[in-house]
Image: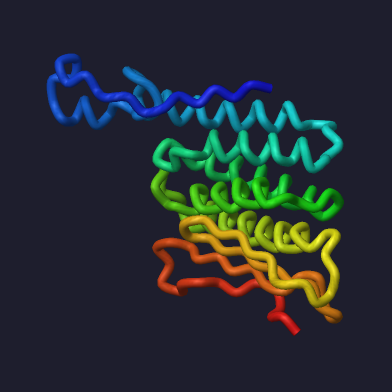
Length: 201
């Protein structure tokens, strides 16, 4: 699977006679409107999910999938409601697969980057129901990731930590539980950080 993600390009102001037209031009690619860019992101997420169907997760495949989805989600301003929910569902699926495979540092970072972009609220504004669904998917994904980070670890090892701009997931194996804590700092929420799981024993 090849995921092609166009990078931003300058808007040709001579072709956009006013600021409104210029703002409507997406950074996804020269000349694409934001609606087309959003549709492209949505289709790429659907293609990723279809390509992974039936795949038996391994550390190598998880690295490929997590890097690919992070690239697709890299421009949160181009994520409409459907793409935000698709992205949240997909990263939860990837995080859940780590329970059997474990996960390396690179894949962990890509997943936490994806958590951040999906939660950024820079894309289409969600209604309360859709926001709650998205946030729960990411919370569940963070829980699964923290458990996956512990695969192969032993009691007494130093805590494992992976961070992106607004999301921090840490884990440490203890005698009482595999899931120690996962902290999501969701931007724009008055509640601030949300503590998940149980504190280290």
